[in-house]
Amino acid sequence: MVKKTAKIGMFIALAMIFSYIEAIIPINFGIPGIKLGIANIVVVTSLYVLGFKETIGISLIRILLMGILFGNVFSLIYSFSGGILSLMGMIIFKKFKLFSTVGVSVVGGVLHNLGQLIAASIVLNNLSIAYYFSVLLVSGVVTGFVIGIVSTKVIKILTSTKMKVFN
Image 1 (cartoon, helix red, strand yellow):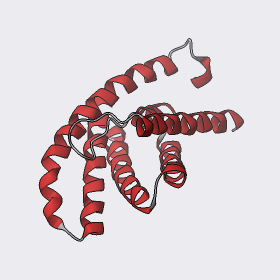
Image 2: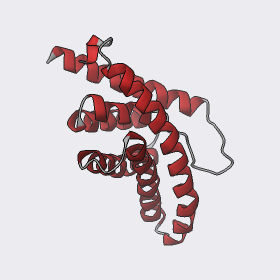
Image 3: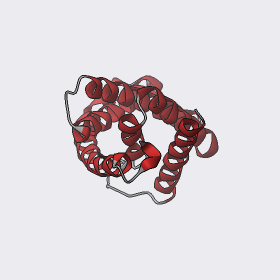
């Protein structure tokens, strides 16, 4: 139990560090709202290394802490809506083995953007921003693909016989 708690704490801390780095060093893709989402490396890796219950906790705690420390009410609303929809999709696709790790990550990226767009439509009381989904779809696929490749490599390292910490 202590070992598992330490792993979860490590994953939360790492996800927060990645989120913070991305917040202070924004990568500008030329389109508002598009981010690489490097904290999702931790989320995808956790899903495969620790399990879905732990990953839900890690993701929700990270979103809450980052929102409290560096965000506002709106960032919390957008992060929670994107994060929850993304997590549910990734859990379902992983559970039923519908895609590889990269595919699961792409699903997460697309659903995260969709969740945030739905939240924005509700907050702004404006459905016309739905046109933006085509741009967010492309960015979700591209960033999800990159995050999935990195996560696959990290998962292999953490689950190798040389890494006794995670076995």
